[in-house]
Image 1 (cartoon, chains in turn brown, green):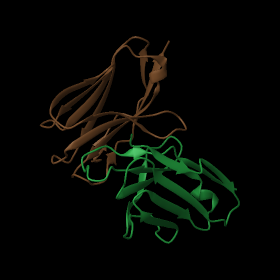
Image 2 (cartoon, chains in turn orange, yellow):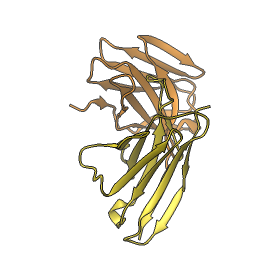
Image 3 (tube, chains in turn cyan, brown):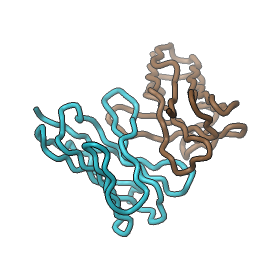
Image 4 (cartoon, chains in turn green, orange):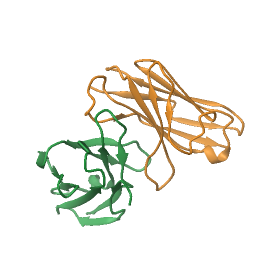
Length: 111
Length: 117
């Protein structure tokens, strides 16, 4: 079992719809969770960080964390073509340690 | 805040050349920096963790004599690809943690695209 798993996609949604990206992790002791967006040919950029169970909202983005189910998700409301990118889920098992990345989910928002 | 600068952004060179890539934290001190490699259509692969003032920790399968890492100050880490060959062509990206903020996200540089002819 991979440490951090994501569906590779591509996930295709129409413009204006909600895009739902999912991620599961294997280390139950993980404390920090991050979503990064990576455009083709570019380096990752941080979208959201979440540390506690529940929802965290920032503009059109909502991160959801369920530590009991070892599950973290990212919702993108009112999806725009500019949201088309690969979304990377990253988990830090221990404080200060390295991040473990999922393989990324490719999102395509169709006009 | 938390800006990471990486240089150069693009390198094209002949096989056998050694290439040095710099990673700087511009507005914070980074005791730890990370070096990743990414091949097309694949996810990030951690190569090594660079610690200021000590030897880097390499991931399994990464040749430490091939990929030399130096982290001489709290704001600069370098990766040198020695005697590069075409199979070393890839996208190399560094990232850094903010000093003293062990649960904070990593901030990435813009990456270096290395092409070996």
